[in-house]
Length: 311
Image (cartoon, rainbow, N blue to C red; front, top):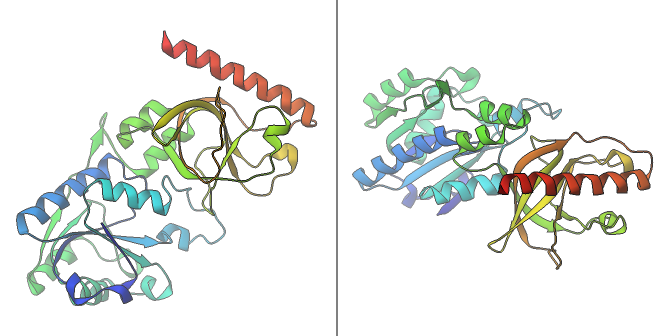
């Protein structure tokens, strides 16, 4: 798969394609339905498939104070999921003042026609674009008639009679309904990142942890969970804390995983952390001794839950 960052990296060889546009946060089953339509049409027309995404996501751009909903998938993980879905090219556009101020007609003319020469466009049923979100499916159909491309709308994808959306996935996860989250995503919810050096506090407390890099985007979850850590094709059960670590006056959110009955060096490894069960909310303890006691309680609770699942 080819990742194209910005309009300035488009070349003549990129002209002519079947495309879709969106955030694709989570790449859930609704997104996967769009991608399946994209792949089928691209194959039928003998053209490359292109997914157009934005960084930052528009809601993040309009909420610089950090009040935008937390991402389900960070950029690198999203690109990997798109690649697994068979997408041939991902065009990542910087969402900035210039792009935000583009009218819907300018977006079609300058991007879809002049820079990509799209032959077919697949869009979700709720797709809006252009300044103040004035562009819609009807506008695209009219543009297609003028410029010679076709437009296909995807049907709403439902689960249990309700629309599948990133918002619904996020709500399920924050309600700790990981089974529903998995049904909406088509897989267990996971966070992927490199294991980095931390303060080594877990080691001092008798429970060494792998600190997974969070970058600048917070996880939609907060608290202590039973998880699976996947490293180099191996799966290890564990206990994960996601939060600010108030007992030690943490300033940034971190994701720490203690793998049960594991010994070894994980620094620099890419770890997938799959969330399975909620244990408790994060809270501040009166000193490290109280925190150490609670960590052991969490580990025992995790082992008990895991044993219950094995029955």
